[in-house]
Image (tube, rainbow, N blue to C red; front, side, top):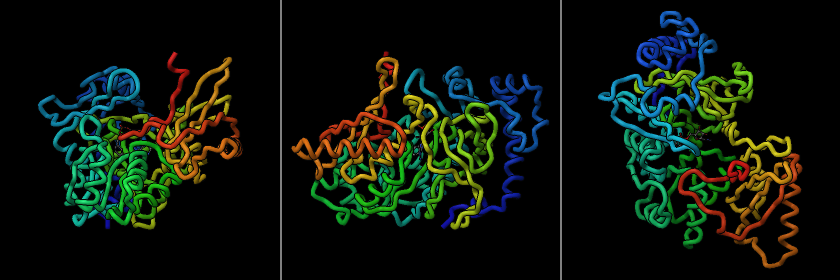
Length: 433
Ligand code: DLL
């Protein structure tokens, strides 16, 4: 089923005409309403009437997270406070949070894109959806909430954490869909087994997992633990929250809702736009958002786009699963490594549990990488030789996949802290000094 066939399966020329119209209006709004953009556009000698097509995007300035911080809290808003009906914020790792505001129409649009996303995963009014993303300033909980209500599913707003209760409601309410981070889904799956339950005791059929990078290896394991089909949902608070892009049943990338968000892929060093198919940094321009429109916002997420029509009938551009964020990329003795590449190697091995952590440090001016691998209950052994063999095997697999020698430390089951939201996969001690 397609929620909004007119848009999602639109003829691309028609879609482009709509985008051009909306984009021209958006430029006019930010020029007159947001001093930051007026200044940036004036510097380039651009006036609203000059912009008629999204083909002109490549000549326009970028927006970065620091611009939002510099204009903290409301300096990027394009409407007076009276029109703001919701605020969210993302905490990030350093400094002030990034604040985002929504008008009534923004919230309406957000529910629409989340409703489209849920429909892609086969969610309908016949379903009960347990929303285990955090409610609050984080956009995950409330974002999924209103989209699910729009679809007409029965919403269970349990929020994040409280694993026992999650398992209880999965059984008692017979939830058919769960929405949470993939790392928390892994934790739920393991906890289910610990309680002596199996997937036959619950009724889940679909998982709406996002807010952090995860691999297809993780997908397979979570699917088998929870007995569901796992779907990838992508979004970021600056652009709207969850529902910027979503996987359909064919799972060949996530469809981007281009009638609201225009994607580009750039080379993060030269800032040049890259053609479809090439990996680079994802950049978004919001063309309908009222409260906080953003021009060419640099997400730092690395992926690639494809425009081929999907077997589901949707014509919307698709983005690949995120490889990671450019600021999560570890450069270890000259080798570029993403945590997701390490995850893929580890989860190929049945001995590794779904939990791992990377510790990066600097010794004698050389970067060092330690991979803490939590061993699955079944494989944990008191025999030193067995563990040593396993340790060597992991080291070998990492070295042959990534060309990198890492220190491997095996840790006992249940020792790596579990997260209820986004997992902390990397501890970079180089930043702590
Ligand atoms: O994480 C919004 C969200 C909530 C998306 C629930 C999906 C589900 P932020 O906290 O602003 O917003 O974080 C945005 O999270 O730039 C990516 O780096 C990462 N991210 C989000 N979804 C995915 C995904 C929410 N599916 C940042 N795969 C983004 C990989 C993701 N990374």
